[in-house]
Image (cartoon, rainbow, N blue to C red; front, side):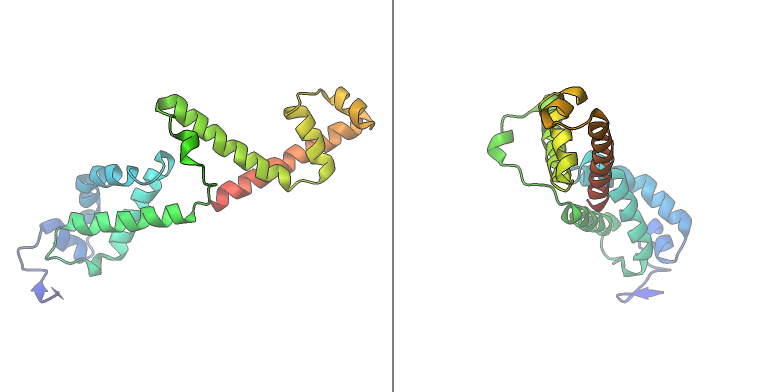
Length: 187
């Protein structure tokens, strides 16, 4: 088999690369074993820790699918890292997080900073979810969770039966959870 004028089957090409180009699945496993840690380290510089494994997996799946495009005159790791970079960028482009002003998080460092940042992201998701609820459901949830009122106090304040508060709260929380879950799936 020739590639860019080089006979892959007989040239001085790396044995793993040659086997991969010829469709040997065991070569992919060997390449993953030897290059997987480097790819994982490289990807972790770009994407959130929770997504690193997915991007690494997507990278090696694409390496297998695109094996015929590998330039055997260049190091295989260059091709693999190029694919990893593209998959990382694709993942980040799909993410639609709110932009947080850098001045707000400039002093955040270490584990506490990560927790505070995660809370800020979560609060933003909850606010968007609440905005999509019907007014009656949103009102009882806001009074319960942001003004710390009991359901009985909410019923008195809104001058509605306690059972109505409970029903609105249950329906509203179920809808809120569903909206947040759907938004996370779209990220």
